[in-house]
Length: 319
Image (cartoon, rainbow, N blue to C red; front, side):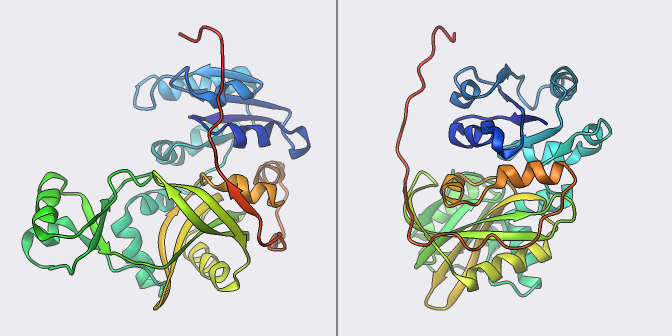
């Protein structure tokens, strides 16, 4: 079975997991638009791709899939999820499995305001969410501090705590697509859920407690087993027909649990789940081979601490 990983970037550990032949893939091909993406150089083959907004990008991918006899495509970059979801039929007509949720689900998760509204209607606890337009029109007057972020942002870029009305007004005028939420305090958790590619049922969820964050990424964390957080994640997965890996953020406050974010892709902290025995690459290979998964990979070890650190990839004459 041959796998194509799109926009691999710095995901060297994740690429390495797919390179383990015991997980079901015989060949792994990576792409990125930059020759300086480290994960390119830990795969069986790598190709420099045009940018995903280039008109030639779809034909480039089809030609690459044909040449490399690709069976499975896995997107990693936020902006590539919707492209693949929209063009799923183009690949599946060639017998290629796309590890991506449906277009409607991907679009909903990317629109943080619409997603919060949809979850609220399902009775799932989410932070109260308002838009910059409501502030500008005077239909919403926030209490400070308030947490602001782009409506379609990723990687915590542009997220910040705002403590004054003057700054909030300036930000909303500059970026009318901002959303506003109460600044919640408490303990933050990450959930790595896998939804079966065959029928979208949630096969299980791995939960970690975040100890330290840096630039939107989990830098230090510890594995935990929390039935209440797992149940919340399953409720979300029942409301949204996911397919494949899903990354969720949950905050526990004095008022209870709140769902913060959901991204229908591999999360940056997934390697901690993998070393605890939660093997998404093997699940993807099994699903691509037509095998439906039974529920339950919740018996992973508690108290395993993960500490992220920088490594270096040295290559000859890339440019």
